Amino acid sequence: MAKRDNTDISKRYRNIPPGTSMESFLIHGRHFTEKWDFRHHIIPPQSSSVTYRLDKTERGAKGFQEYASGDAHKTSPIYIYDRLDEPTRGMLEDELAGIEGGDFCVAFATGMSAIAAALGVVLKSGDNLVAHKTLYGCTYSLVTNWYPKLNIGHAFVDMRDMAALDAAINDATRVIYFESPVNPTLELIDIEAVRAVADRHNARRPDDRKILVIIDNTFATPYCQRPIEHGADMVVHSLTKNIGGFGTDMGGAVIGPHEMEGQLLLYRKDFGAALAPKSAWPMLVYGLPTLPLRLNHQMETAMQVASFLHGHPKVARVVYPGLENHPQFSLAKRQMRDTQGKFAPGNMIYFETVEKDPNHPHNNIKVVDWIAKHAYTLTLAVSLGQLRTLIENPGAMTHAAVPEEKRRESGISPAGIRLSIGIEAAADIIRDLEQGLARAE
Ligand SMILES: *Cc1c(COP(=O)(O)O)cnc(C)c1O
Image (cartoon, rainbow, N blue to C red; front, top):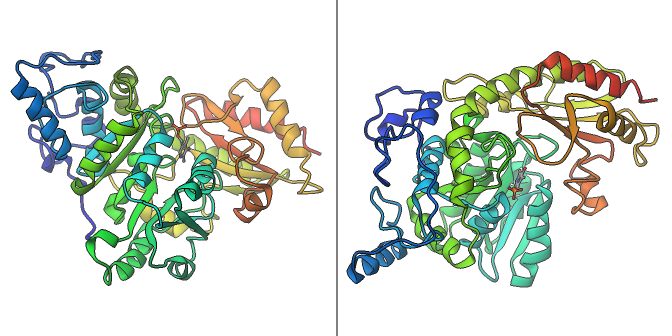
């Protein structure tokens, strides 16, 4: 698959002046939409209609036909029923497809339902997926607890090693799946290198056995990284996180090439889990327009916080793609770029406390528990990408579904702490961390 250049959003939609930036596009979208008569609204109305009036049988029949053929997302779709397609969610999908540089987006009720759909439309009994050894806990559980029941196999490899990836692929492999940056350890996977491995195998395969490269881009968001430009076939997101941005609604999305659109729409129709229009609306009206502002501020703060942690005597290790000591710093600089080309290492930090016995961390719990009780700007909570800075202990919380020895293999130390930087002042966050770390022995 050829890499694509999607930097000029005006080439994709009418009415957008050449050279328009992602910042402006996220506020104004397609300027007005033909999805519905929203032309005179500044803010699109929040649609709320389970079913739609059909003028005559013929219109209903045509609507179902177009839907099944994957043409349902065109400019003036025939709406039939919310779970099939509807306008508020449709506008959000247009913008997400636009900023990721894919042909389409299908939005789901949660990130997990989007991941299950992206994998579900490709994999069938007897197939196999190869995934990076460290995965979001529920994705790991999907692959290891549920797919074996469907006779779908898996192999976990360290995808920083392309020879290991190459060796893990066999005739049954249909999907290469990973996150980058990886949750929670923030190592990076080289998307172009993975693409090259997939292409080598695909050269000898018929079309219906080609390996697809699917990436979870939740941590970076399309503001910081656009994997399709680097050769990924499909991108999945938890919209619950940075894209939603305010922590009010859950959502997920799959973005990809036109060939997959019909299958994903059918999957969503039949398995359900369509994103509710009431949840799509705040993402469209608050989340996307402020994404660049929020992330720019959060990245500046993350850099300061990571630098503070890096020099701290009670911190054994800090991983932030923006720090020069990140083992893959040159890859970070190549792969994580905002649409203006500026280095964009994201708002997530991972660090480990110094421990006497790393298997039975003591300081880690003391620091996190002190913060949970006393810190003003840090909140002990899972999830990420909100206005508030969130702190959590992945080994005990988000990645608890991963068995302990697997966690260790994946580099998730019991002493690990994950930080999602919010929009508070950097000095306040650092003061809270400093006071928390002072509790470590
Ligand atoms: C949160 C998260 C998910 C799951 O998203 P939900 O919206 O909670 O279902 C998937 N991948 C990553 C990287 C996440 O952080």
